[in-house]
Amino acid sequence: MPKERRYRSRNPLFFCFWLIHIALLIQKISAKVRICSKLTALKINKHRKQTDRDRYITPKRIPFQPSVLTNSFHNSLNTNDGWPLKTTKLHHFLILLRFRKNRQLFRSINCNSCKKMAQNTDQQFEHVIKVCREVFEKKMTDYGTAWRILRPESVTDQIFIKAQRIRSLQIKGISKVDEGIRPEFIGIINYAAMAIIQLELGVSDNPVMPHDEALERYLKAIDEAKSLMENKNHDYDEAWRNMRISSLSDLILMKLFRIKEIEDHKGKTIVSEGVEANYMDIINYAAFALIKIDFAE
Figure 1 (cartoon, rainbow, N blue to C red):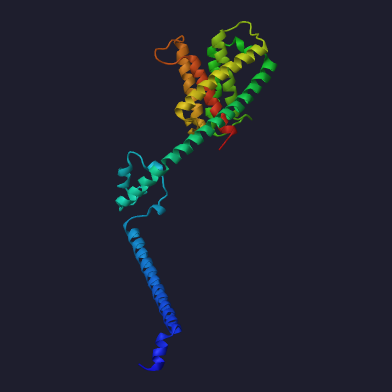
Figure 2: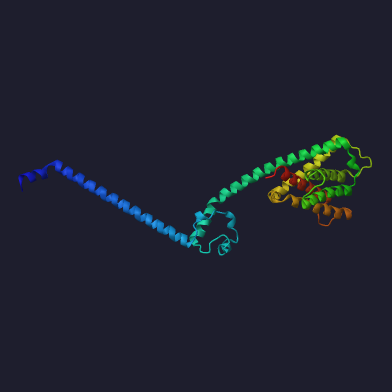
């Protein structure tokens, strides 16, 4: 072996140069391998997405709707009503998984919304009753307690006239008298409270009552109706909010026809509720209509 070559092979700088050269070579090779693997992964993902589009619509393209997961869930998947006919078991599993994962969240949202809605209903009901009370007090200042001479049947007919005018205006859509349906609903509430007082005290030939006593009995009747409303709202879950004002006026008329039948039978019923309960329902229906008018969503 030549002397110069032996010297190079034993020189430490020579070995360092070759180690650096080999390290750089390995780094270039690993970089090329990484690039190739990324390109391959992109091609595979692109192919998978194309295959998924051909097979079924991915969950990202369908907004998640828990209402779809009803008893007829599997039947709805076999129709073309908003769902693809070519669905897979994976698609079903993903939807069910999302529903179970967010079920507790939906429950908490519903509970919070119910609490807020109940608070709003209480405030709105108080606002409506405040308006009706002001009208009641002003008319009592002008006319006194002349309504104390009315028999319950007469009060029923007076409420019927107001409810019938509301229905007529809703059907015709035109009013020749410069007064809308809002004052009629206020009058229905006040007359229904008067009817409850008349049922409790009876008819008086001397229609004189201290204003403080009349107002106290008026508020008592309203409070009883409100208590009934709160109990029914708890059971029916504010179902009246999805009703139309026209439906509420029809329900008031239906209650009035029931009251008339009971009055014609001298107040005797077999299984039905009495006249007073129907008057309370009328107060609540009219209050709901006023809430929808004053707090239109």
